[in-house]
Length: 86
Picture 1 (cartoon, one colour):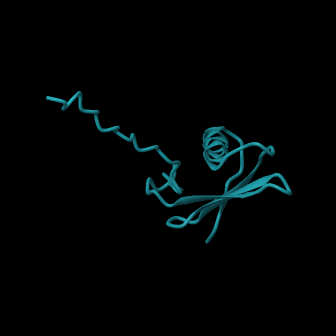
Picture 2 (picture 1 turned 45 degrees about the vertical axis):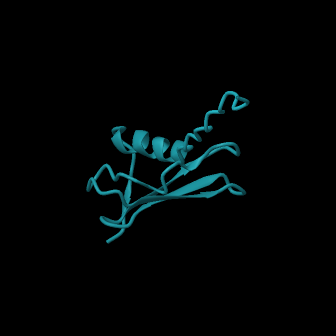
């Protein structure tokens, strides 16, 4: 008598976010941090655990994960130099 149809509760799907730290190809720990400097077009990549650090050239519309992927490509490419912080 007058109840009508009940509405279903709307389920909110949590949105995935990009990670702040990435796995290091040298030591395997999640301690690689990417810092973008958009004005100069450079991304600085540092591992807080083993001291691996380098920089890669980036464009204006690039994210940290893209710079990290460029770093991984540079790391596994033969003949590229990666600087160790000792």
